[in-house]
Length: 378
Image (cartoon, rainbow, N blue to C red; front, side):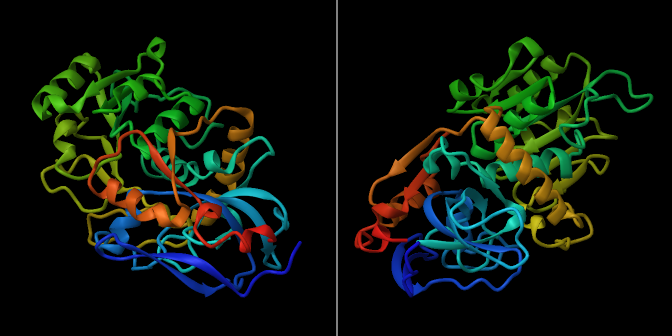
């Protein structure tokens, strides 16, 4: 393998969602379980512009806010056992830290990285990490619908509660919402109530109506949505809600249909909703708990999984890689943005303006202007 250059191109995002490209030093590995990855492709997430705009209180500012990575391992830390230089991988970069995915090279950790086979295009693989880790943390870490795919028992009613409980996925066409649906299918969690807007046709392609899954259009308004949710429930109680939107009073579309004693709702954006009755457990699904134990913002704010995030990441990284190779986990629809990192600003502004639905934007790093020399070697 050719010698690494001393500098690389890296994109920085401003509070106004403008993007500038800089020459910066190649990252140096400092953690024994870290990997240096040559980024082939990266995908965009709404948090990438929100972080720069200081809209996420629990994540510190970082100019290169990209985290979804697919590429080739260049070097590994001394304690890394599962990967070696030359391996094709996808990974989730630690949010809010230097050396993210909007660059030629990025740094990731062994427990949030998984292998790719030779058939998996990098453009597809980079759509997987963030959404899938968020989905599995929400299902198994926060809502505790199941402990994992090894839990073969169907969702059981708590003793003395009567009818079975259901899972509602709000924002079902988002990358994270869709990941929850896919993971629920892998783990045998049915029936699902999927609340969606413009991406209704996409969600219909994911659900299994033979197992009772349904979709409901939120654009009817909260009163009508709650009415339809209750109709689907048919007297049963709604215990589990994954809210993949978590803003603009999204909870008004479902909380009145929830079990007021044992209900659980997890949000992808933090903050305690004071108008939800106290009997419903609220939490925030935070992928940051894969690297650290997150502290509540207040007495009522349960953020992330707490302890055990590293072990959780190790276990599910192996499973995610396996599910991809076996075809159990399907890729989210995506669109490649022209110009590599030079096209990043357009992609992030489209996300900020809410003009994208059921699609992830993907950046091919090698298409960035003035990178031909760099990518002809390493």
